[in-house]
Length: 343
View 1 (tube, rainbow, N blue to C red):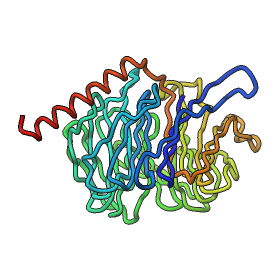
View 2 (tube, rainbow, N blue to C red):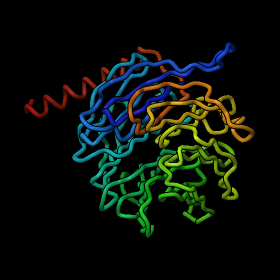
View 3 (spheres, rainbow, N blue to C red):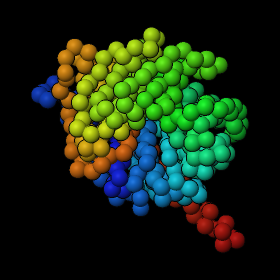
């Protein structure tokens, strides 16, 4: 299990989680810290042995978690990159696609083996705030600063649906089973059917919600300016339980860790990771969160203002396979250089 966090100070931080029968039962080990970008990191994504980070310097950086090294940069964007998401098919360790959303309203679709651009899809008239990929890999949802919801057909590489929300949404997430999706607007979360966008229910938090992560059994975890973590039941629209004062500052990122990243798995469902502007990454046992004020199972102090968090329970591949993908990236870059010289 691995976690990657981004910060205002342009750094990204990588960690590995390891369980044991000793005390403590979970340890969080630093893997790396990189001054990855020229501006604050806005988004990170993790899938198996690969991680990606994005910032307002118009670039996406790629990393090999197996060797804790940088693979290279994706420089096709013409504006700030605001959101990242990998698509990894079931029972596969290496991601198939990487999607990035930008301030110019576009969504970029990349093949992940090697990392080459497949399509640039204009979706919004203003910047994209967030992006979510359905577990089927056939479609993605976006919300933008134009107060609209967009749907991208990833098979055909075009926008297939677009509607005005009436209010700007900053968060969009699919449930783990893909049957529902969630949209966050300031201090509210609305729940909708994925098939026809039918409204189901609404959650309301005391303060602005800044991050969200879907869990099993219809739960949605949120964090924000109230410095706590709340678990909402999407079946009845009520708060199931909460971790009050989980951090000393705003919660900026949440990750639910499941076995192999698969819906329906049960081994690691009790693990929830959070990151905050106070620079601390914490991992919680959510089995006791609804009974008492829990103590974090493990924590790491970055001494930075964290902006985002991503993680994966997928086991890293052997270095040989990751090396193969590095070689493909280098080969593609050489081919592009030759093309530019007219060879």
